[in-house]
Image (cartoon, rainbow, N blue to C red; front, side, top):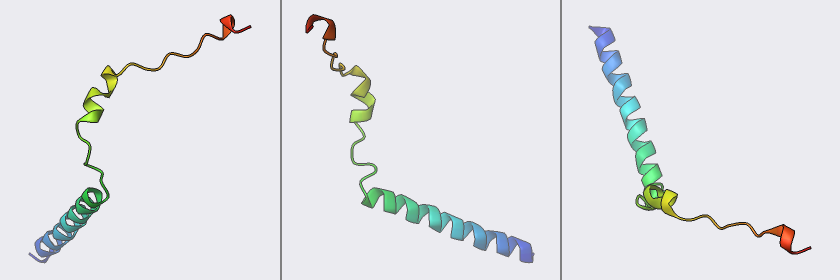
Length: 55
């Protein structure tokens, strides 16, 4: 019975650590832009200049 109480206590501590990490990430702006990554692949890349015509 004592081991069950220890495991419950450890799981609560671990859950609180994950919750604190989540709030820290939200506070630091980790989840501010959730739209741009999904459409970034649709943007065209800038084409490099053709260096053979400059010589």
